[in-house]
Length: 433
Image (cartoon, rainbow, N blue to C red; front, side, top):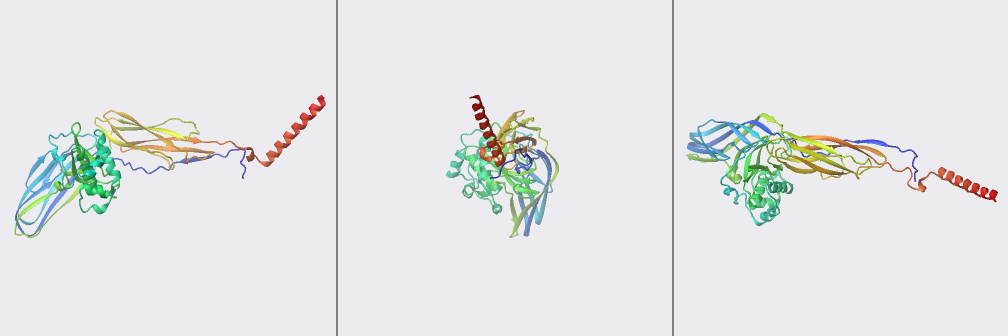
C-alpha cells in the first residue's frame, strides 16, 4: 500500500461544462408579411370556377391588419375561421395572389368567446375516439382546467415519436395512439381526440411556424405546421402545441391560416365548369418577418442556500415573477454540471403579477472526490430569461485513517519512544523502593 503524505495536496477544480438544455428563447410578438399564390392550371378552357380558400384570421393571439387579393372576393367570417370566396371566369391558367399583414402577440391575448362549441366535441374523420383513447385520456379526468390540457399535451409530446415518414398524409387519432408515431398533424389530432373524450372542446389550427431552434424540423425557415386550440368558459380559446409542448404562450413566429374540426375541414376547395379534363390546383406561401420581439416582463432570479462546505447536497431555488397583465406558462429548468443528479425541470403557470418559487435539490455525491476544491456553476433557464450562480465544496479527509497507514519509520520511532518510556518508569519505581 502506498502511504499518504503528511500534508494534504488540494487541487482546485472548476466545473463549467453545463448540460445542454432543451429550452429555447421565445419571441413574444411579431409582424409578418404573408404572400399566398393560388395556382390553377387546366388542360382546357374553364368557363367558371369558384375558389374557396382559408386565409389568415383574427384570433386570441393573431390580428390581420391588411388583406389584399388580386381578384374580387367575398370574405366569409365565422369566428376565427375566415375563408375568401373567389369567382373566376374564362381561363385555362390562373394565379390568384394574396398579401396579408399579420401581427402576433403571445403575451397579450384577446379572449375570444364562442357561444357554440358542440362541433368541437364530436368525433370526426381524423379525430376518431375509440375506447383506447378514452381509457388513456381518463387518466387525466380528475385534473381541473387548464392543468388537464397541459398534462394531455405533455403526454402526447412525450409518448409520440416524431417521424418524418408521416409527412405525406394525415392519419386518424386511433391509428396514432396505436403506432405512437407521426408529425404535427398526428400529434394534434390525438391531443384533440383525448380532449374531446374528456368533454373539452378542441379544434385544429394549421399554418406556418418559423423553426428557429431546429428543434422539430431541423432547419431555420418557415414550415407548414399544425397545432390545436382548446376552449374553456373562463379562458376562451387557448392555443396548445403538443409537438413543441407549448401551452398558451406559443412562439410568436407563427401564422395561422385555417381552423377546423380536423385537418380535412381546413383544405382549400375548388369547383369548376368547362371543357377541361384535368384541373391542377396548388398553393405556395412565402412569409417575411417585418418585426419581432422577445420582450416579456418576466423576471428570473436564482437563490443558492448556504450549506456546509463538505455537504453532498445543494438546495437551489428559481424565483420567477410575472409582471404582465396576462397569465404566463413557462418551463423552469436548471443547467447543471455533468454528473450532478437532479430532476431539474418543471412547468409553471403564473397569473398576472404572481411570483413563484421552484426548488431543486442537487445531489453532488457522484461528482465530488476527497481533497479537491470544487466551484460549481448553475444556471436557471426559462423561455423568457435566465439567471446564474455558483457554489463551492471541499471534503478534507484525515491524514491517516488507521495505524496501518503510518510510515514504517514513524512506527519504529513510536515503538522506541514507548520502550524508553517504559524503561524510565521501571527505573523510577526501583529507585523509589
